[in-house]
Image (cartoon, rainbow, N blue to C red; front, side, top):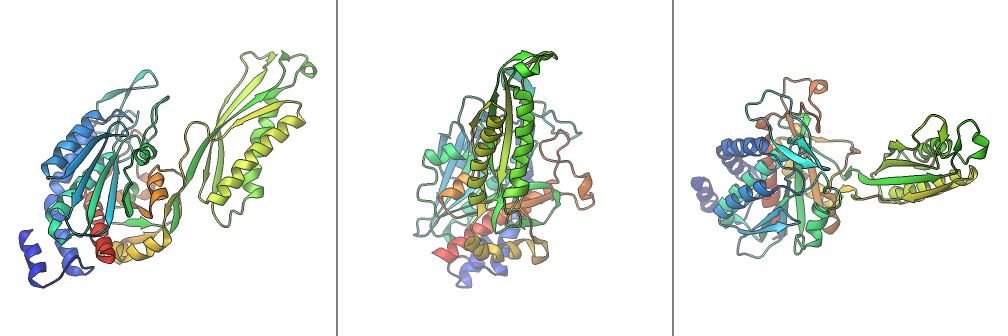
Length: 431
């Protein structure tokens, strides 16, 4: 590692270059640290913690970062950890982010380091598992932190390593995640932010990107239909919230199919919960609908929100009922938006790091990510890194958020290299 840095110095190369010498150097460093990255990932996987409860996880990360000699802050957004690497030279501030929390999912595989952890969720004891890959995200960022610290003399500006809690959502009655970290000043002075997500159905060695919206905004909603209770044998004496709710559900679907320009971007309205009544022969006084909205364009998001209010209230009024709409319900994430100019600027880094044949532009997904709150503050990029074994058919890959979730650990090395090279090349371009 020292020989590689000395070679750069002897060649008279000031700063970081976007050529094969730098790529080879980072690649060699990633090779050397890969066993530690795997070790860290297995530790996190075996000891997962739920959102806003990542206390031991935070201590483990803090100890490691302090061992690198970094300036470390803890307790941000409850359990978040942030470290700063200061090159001592003027230049941009690059933020790199990894999420920390596990999920209330029982692990069902034969990994020797599988989780047997328990946690409390909604007042109940539940099994806990890293069923979305956050364990790999933390390990990859720790690997990048080590390489960048070793290359401090080649940096200009600062690197901010953000280990974020509660990406999966804070427990009921609490706040957390990226939004709170932003409120507490984590993005102050930052010029750009980069983040990665492992993908269980993408081949190891592949990096996926997209200009603009890559993950959807998410807006949960609740609609309460209020009517008049009556005996089920005499429906004319009621104002029936059940039939009204059914019409509202169907009406909501026409917003996407008939009112939004779907040739521009996708949108989704899903009603996932209906509650009302308790007997077959009683028409209840009210019915509650709970659902989610996903959009990839801010203008469409605004139009869709207005349409939900209009549809629900208009249909309810036509049935002599009332509709109370709460939108958003309890949380709301913006679109995870890759700044197009920044994407163009950093695309050569992706191709150099992964190999041009392994860089794929993909369609957006309607899942959501609170990394979007960081991107609301500064231009940023969010990328997907392959974690599927090459010999496993895509359709057989275990999905995220399931008990069978599993990734190929060899995919993490590309993530380490990407985080490192994105930082180095951005600094070169903005010193």
